[in-house]
Each structure stands twice: as structure tokens, then as C-alpha cells.
Image (cartoon, rainbow, N blue to C red; front, side):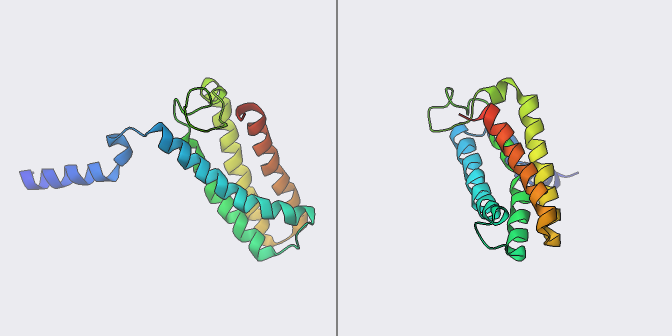
Length: 152
């Protein structure tokens, strides 16, 4: 392999994995996950209103929001980096240090969030509130279990 080819391969490898080349700033990680959770609330709130009958059920809108939630559920975990918790981070966060101390439980709940959000998106695609309601409640219970243990 000549020098130009080796240089091109090395450059391509370096460009394909930027996080391995630079350490993530704690403030960026907090901002990242907080942004995701704002988007989660943006989608979950109207779905909750439809489930509770506070807003007229719109199957297409519910399904779209459920699909958004399923995609968002895969994102926040990487934003929980060491030093980004209440008491260890100088900025504003409600994430408790218990996350770092009990990572296995936290990561398990986050995995449940992904699984339950995917099940909600699947139920929503049929447009049947009788199938949607229990799937929605599973997501809500998963969120609550995490908030109870890991959020200030």
C-alpha cells in the first residue's frame, strides 16, 4: 500500500469516528440529553392528552408522535457521561449521581424505554385506542420508574 493510499484510509477511519478522537464535554452531554427529553415531552404530552380524552384522538397524529418517540428513545443514554449529574455538574440538571452509581439499573430502564416506545409505535400504527392505551401506560410507567430513582 503506497503512502497516499495509507493516508486516505487513515483519514477515512478518523472521519468516521469523531467521538473517539475528542472527549465529550460534560456541558454538551447535558445539553444533548436535555434537548432529547424536550422532544420526548413534545411528542408524549399530546399523546397523553389523547389517551386521557382531553384531546380528540387523531390516529395519524398519534402514530406519527409514537414513531418519533420510538426514535428518540434510542438517543439519550449516550448523553449520561461521568460528571454530568446534579452535585457533580456546575450547570443545571436534575439527573442524580445515582445514575453513575447504579448504571446497570439505569441502563436497564433506558432499554425498557426503548422496548416500550417501540411497542407503542407498533400499537399506534393500527390506530386502535384499546391497543394503544396499555402500550402508552407501559411507556409512562417506565418513565416514572426512572424519574423516581434517578431524577431530582
